[in-house]
Image (cartoon, rainbow, N blue to C red; front, side, top):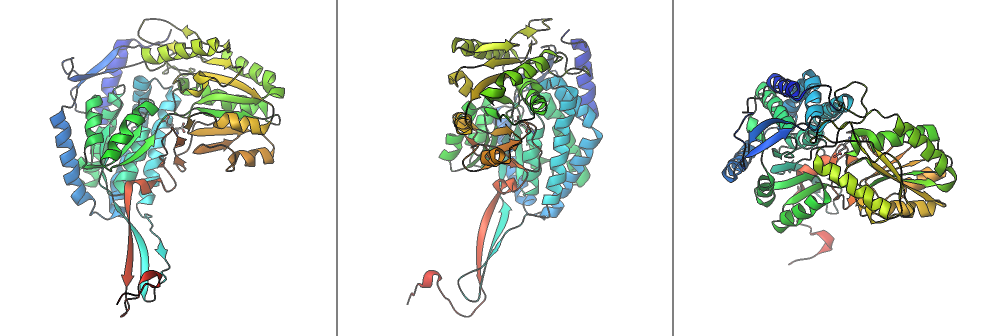
Length: 511
Ligand code: UN1
């Protein structure tokens, strides 16, 4: 059975959760072109119908965000941090409910749904601390009697466009930092996961009330593509932070650039692991299986390619196949499930098409590849696949958002790194080795060309403390930890002359 819970029970549970989170939005808007249907991939059934924002709704939201920015940007940063502290507290209280809602709407297993909420709590903690640490540099000047420094000021309105697969955490990475930075936020979530967004927005509004701040500093737009486009094209939106496919990013980036707005892009990945002869193969197997089959292969950091030394390839593939054969696939709400459903029919079609292309390129499906637990035509559970490939063909270079692991072999580390980097995407990467030279080489400038490079852990499952994002078609943006906050602020360089003279820089004489 793909779902031990009936669809009616899921609906009732969803509504009870939204109620406890404090959501008041109507869940039964008349279905039609002006509505967004919320569904659960567990059963494929509809959970709710939400009114979709009109162009004039979006206009009002942007105008309100801009007005809210004028006063919010004047609040001292450590005081701004208080609303994020309240949000973090509410997330702790409602972790189980919100995690379950993520499982219901995005299909993540219980532990991953909870993990996503934990990621929100973590970034809230980080941002509260950051609210007292928005440091600028003081810089030595070449002129006597002068001082030079930089300040970081609030940027403006930030549009946050998020994907279905991390329906709540990605909003929090952006919003926690943006609010502490003094910006205001407009969130356009994926049309596939509106209810988790509604739940989070309800919690945010409670946090705003508790902190005594204007709730308009972070607003939600439930809408279709046109609402996202309105944010992209509006010059009052200073930064568009978009997470999703490379195709989406290719549409967004030039439109924002056209009006000299800023973008922060977190797009497709095609994440690989190099497995060397010295690797601990049992640990490697566990790392690879989590990264490739976990979340049903629907993370942007999911492992898609394994590049293994020819001398250990058979042994590794044997261990991987054995592990794949024991994976429990089914309702993400069942406690023993490791692999939940794909998000929808489109994802399943992509999975099938990629496997067909891989086989026609000479690949061999050594495990998986089938739709399983078919109880109805609307939910899509698949057995994660491993495909050995004779070469890195076009389909391997393409990101398919489903659990397919392509396996390629190599003879020299040079060859492995070349194969590793020979894809258009550059998000995350890893090497499994116990050889220090190989590990350091992979992390060096001559190694992985990705934004994230790991040793002896898979490419997925990053913590919030590091900067998250990647190069090439991944879009170049960095979110979350380290100094990613700088993307949400504008830098002012200030030179102060406290002398009675007017010396010019570079020794220039004038008059
Ligand atoms: C994503 O899939 O868009 O590193 C984000 C990870 C998670 C975030 C993934 N912390 O896998």
